[in-house]
Image 1 (cartoon, rainbow, N blue to C red):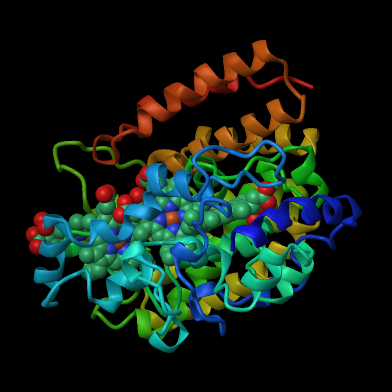
Image 2: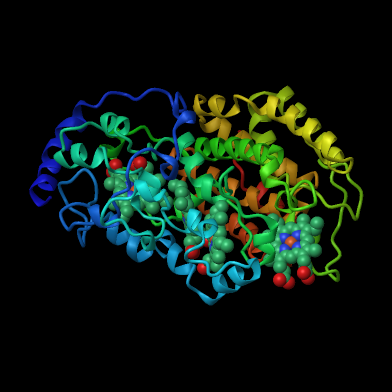
Length: 450
Ligand code: HEC
Ligand code: HEC
Ligand code: HEC
Ligand code: HEC
């Protein structure tokens, strides 16, 4: 192992220089299998963590990759603690409430709180107690570890051998969402929430940024891998989230706890907020009156801003079909499924479209203006939309800074205004739409005028 890892350092550098441009994002990756369901054996974190592989105490100076990925993951990344979470009192209580013997052996919990391939796909030193380990994201290493360690394989070849393309925004979105939203095999239902599981929310670019990075995007990295900017990452994440949500709404397996749709598809705060905090206001985007449980449409609001920026008619259509979905949800299952199917058809292909669009300076500014406009028209009175919008604006502002669209002074002003938006969404149960709106107005004033 030691010798082999030394070799990779030399040969990867040569290969990297020869690497050619990769195909456009999104081509073919939609079919990529999530590591957990892949055909290759998972060898376990120990197989990646050797001190001359990815377990060095400090980054290596002449390596293309840092080599201390394991340390970053083990010490700073919540994924390394995901299994330990299942042994806490809180998890034991959730398990008890669900009638499970315990949480740390329950498949329903392990599927997201660990790398949990089927028993015949586990190597000799594999341990589920490692939590969400390297191979939960990078793919079962059975076929690629050898060639990868020998240093003889290019990134493309590693991917052919089962390395999951985590740098690819579409594939990454699919991967992260499989646990951070769920898929047709694993899902946090309202029954699990009711037993005590926390609310989940996700935005691909923000979560990529807050997962402690065990890689550095530098010139060398850019030679080996194509890098999506934050705005594109955000857009793709939203388009894919909508697909997952629509598939979830249409999935009979995930809608069998009595009420249809399953309660997790609704806006949690439509039911869960103190009755003394009276805050209902009409929203043109739902068309619903007071006292009606609303579906959580935060991702749809984001999506129509992005789609509408590229194609105004499409944005309008999405808005109309979202309103139709809200209405249908008050009319019963048949109407709801029909509205879901219409939205599914309208949003088909958006992932690919965003994957192939270069999101540039004009887009960044246009999208910020589009987001603020939704807020000004009252669409962020619901917490989850305000939360998504805040993460979105933050992703865009960071991208503007990175792309040199705004200078330091402008960035600092925008960032300070954004901090006020973050303050307003800090505690979901204490959310005050007016406070958010005021913060949004102040933020609007900092957007550069073209
Ligand atoms: C196998 C399931 C799984 C996959 C895949 C996964 N996560 Fe997670 N993630 C979790 C779990 C479970 C937690 C919570 C861990 C805990 O605290 O117990 C978590 C926590 C996080 C957190 C910390 C959140 C917080 O509130 O501080 C971030 C950030 C995060 N994940 C980002 C990502 C990103 C980005 C991806 C995709 C590259 C991803 N995750 C893929 C399961 C997963
Ligand atoms: C579909 C994936 C999924 C399933 C299934 C799932 N979880 Fe989670 N869980 C997550 C994610 C993702 C987070 C982190 C949420 C965040 O911070 O954004 C989390 C967070 C938690 C937390 C809070 C951790 C903390 O420190 O804040 C607990 C406790 C927990 N889960 C327990 C369980 C138990 C017990 C089960 C089984 C009954 C379970 N989970 C099933 C994905 C899942
Ligand atoms: C929650 C998902 C997740 C987990 C768990 C995870 N990674 Fe990663 N890893 C990523 C993402 C996302 C990237 C950035 C995109 C890319 O370069 O593929 C990345 C990048 C890398 C890179 C590429 C660096 C480069 O310069 O090309 C290496 C090496 C790596 N990870 C090793 C590890 C090791 C070793 C572990 C376990 C100790 C691990 N990762 C755990 C998601 C994860
Ligand atoms: C249609 C209304 C409705 C929606 C929407 C809803 N819930 Fe609930 N929730 C309930 C009811 C009713 C209970 C049971 C309360 C009780 O037993 O006292 C409950 C219980 C809970 C509990 C347990 C509370 C306790 O006292 O132990 C949690 C946590 C929870 N829900 C989270 C969520 C989350 C997160 C969402 C959004 C994904 C959500 N709920 C959406 C109605 C709703």
